[in-house]
Length: 185
Image (cartoon, rainbow, N blue to C red; front, side, top):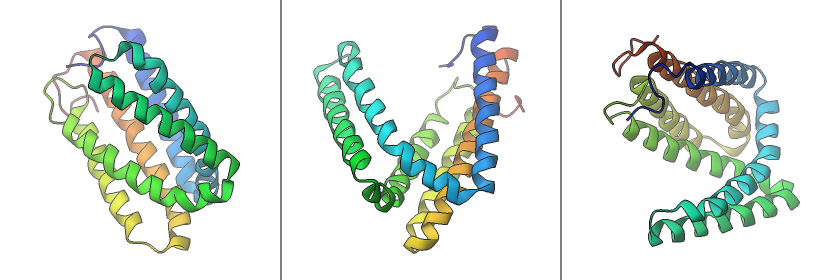
């Protein structure tokens, strides 16, 4: 199922614009990996708090009791983790590699699975992004901690760069009505 309606140039334009911004941010992160890693350590607690709050707000739209339970658990844990990391910045830096490894592996797997769903705009690029996320997660998993801090910034940049490319491809594909595949780029 398409994320956009064919011909909805506003949605397509936003996807393309967001993709361009993410490509630029990805390139900047690759160029300054320690800054990217430090920024990630600062942003992680805020992102967890926002994620938790959004999960709790979305409880009213959950389709089933299981979904409500899952969103409640994820929401509360995200808020607690966000507060913990906000008030314990050293813990944020120490746990960042673990969190990023889990994030890259899980989101990579999800992107890979989604890339096999017929009708998803830019699904080839979503799949490529998923494979790259999984590879980056595995590479981080095999590195010593000091090296990991530098690699985190580079890998965040690479992941963000490819998410941007996938968004641009999806926006172009939806705008021009290409069938799912690579033809958007």
